[in-house]
Length: 227
Image (cartoon, rainbow, N blue to C red; front, side):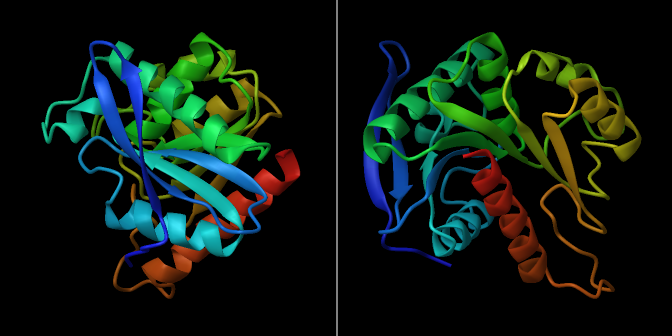
């Protein structure tokens, strides 16, 4: 689902990492703006991220998708954590510039959401009212643990976890206690039967499209509540 209404932008991460690209999709009657980071293996034009952005736009939620420097250079190896966090900060600044007075939210798919949360735990993201994770990677496949989420208790703004029940990177028995430790500011929305990218089994009664609609509906409602 290609959306040609997205505006291509660029912004500087820092002197060493240089310039990265972004795609701003801003409906005429936007009510909020989501700074949307990609996952480790695919960039801002990945089908899932693009479909989500289009569906969010239909609900009057603007999005700024952006590349991390390694993806901009077409490298398969992610940047250092410091560079990834700097990119998140630069993307939020770019969103403030292009979004005007729109309420800001930030997050992303898998690694992009986690890096956004690490940046937010280190220092408040300027103007950001909440974080949204489209599949938080709590642990590696087959290596369950909650260490990757320990910093989330230091994030002082609301958090929405959008997770598939079959996600091999976030076992529910670990994710639910983590949300409890974070407290009332954390909300968990579970897609029954969904995997890390919300894909459903062929035997499922719901299609991937219907699931993405439900995920986006939850995200937009949550943003409206926290704007």
